[in-house]
Length: 324
Image (cartoon, rainbow, N blue to C red; front, top):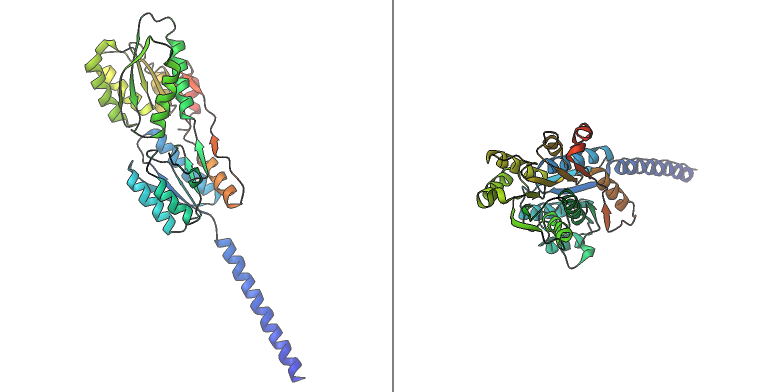
């Protein structure tokens, strides 16, 4: 009888322990969410600021813990941030690379730690493509082609040479390389279209103005077209053109890329001819990809965003709709 009572008491204790452990397990499951480490290039433009905001808001909406790092446009800062994310054992690492090359060692470290890497907005140049899972963002080469096609159509009735000055993005960055490539691809069999000056404006408004001032001093009224790799540089260049006593979008045709609000305001004011869209609102796509990865789903190697081309004539109608 005593043995029976002892067994019953032990059973009660055992059941109680099982229930406590189960409860603790449930609490642990509830606490364990997804942690995403994200390294941003910086805040060099309206586009980048909107991109950061989209990622922060989407992470919050998705219930994903976001560890955010601003690289201030320096690759070494991004590499440090990625190593920090590895040390913190985040679930997924995502980043927008400042430049294309130089990532292989740190990406190998992430792979060794079994932390998947997602690229956003920009590509990397690595020999081993298994070091990253997917690239989410725009087709920069196609953006360059769209800019070139629009320009060729625009200048159809122009007699004589079409002299183009080009404001390139950050040297070595994917958008700078690809937007130049796509644009030149369209113009290669059109000998009257000539890029007479090309220099980096580092994707910033201030540098865009500074370089355009130098172009104007060197070439003066010989310039027919400005092709800017982003709107911020184009807006800076517009200031330089006006200060030189010329009319932007009339004396010099201006083609740029991004389609930020500032570009639509410039078009509405008659100072910019066209902007090719490159959407920064990648946050929701990124969070979906992170959740799919954590659920064990396979992702395509390339996730391309859908975008359009907006000439000056559409600015007044489109401006109120712009979210960035």
